[in-house]
Image (cartoon, rainbow, N blue to C red):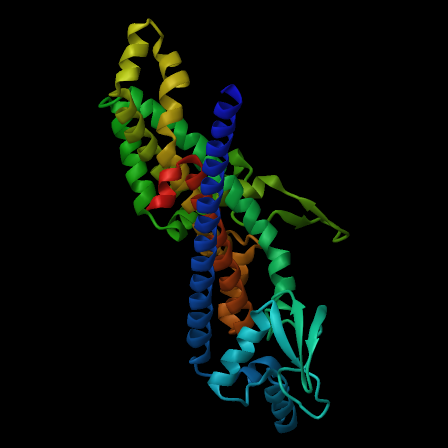
Length: 381
């Protein structure tokens, strides 16, 4: 009888585990599918937006050095002489990891192999199917430099800025949010509420100008901070670069102001709601000090909305850093986007926007998967 009991229990656990894994896999597959559809929509919108702009891309690439023969060759090489529909499919072909290359030596189209590594999978009469990394094309203004190289050089600086900003917002936001909840309706709570409201309402570019002027110019003798500067600085003799961490302070503070204000209010309101729960009153009745009640019981349960906000803000910071980086002369992806807009370097703009959109989608998928793992009820919605 005992063997039958354990066998039934084993079968039940196996079925339960199988159902759980199946629902989890289906949930992840749906999220990935929605992510691809969203990215496809972003690619389509970006292509349509930047291909209805006035101007000739071939002339942008050649600047003032063009002649009729050069223009003709450039238009053929990059497919600018084709219809917008063909150009759109050429663009999808470049971005797709699974793409098509022409093997016809007489065929001078944009399906000719590019200067990148790829692995041939199938070969037909005049076309072969290859596997490659997404090709973001070449810059119009940087002597044919690949867009992927431009992004790889600037993206780390933006990532460092975003990470420091969100860490600053999280730690300070939780700290001041807890204090505001503990000292509810006091002068401290009101002051923090006013500062939080200002932080959420003031645009980032205005905050950047204000902080650069006040802390980098007016108070420069006391703070030692510069109005502008990037993470890597060339030494006085021009022989190399070194890291200047102090240049990270002002842009990180400015970029973190708005999420800081949101985290403070979310933490305050969530903690006040937790304080009204029965188990908190029980903990107080047992004689625990307010510090122990907050540390051991309240703060962990109050962090859920904060985690939700942080995950969304971190992804949006990559896009929100554009003007902050430009004002502080921080050599990141945001500054590169502004410079490319000024010079109409369309491939760099399009590639940068696609990378930011892809990161945003990936982060949101990961957050949804983590939530579904923590709370299986989400998969049933």
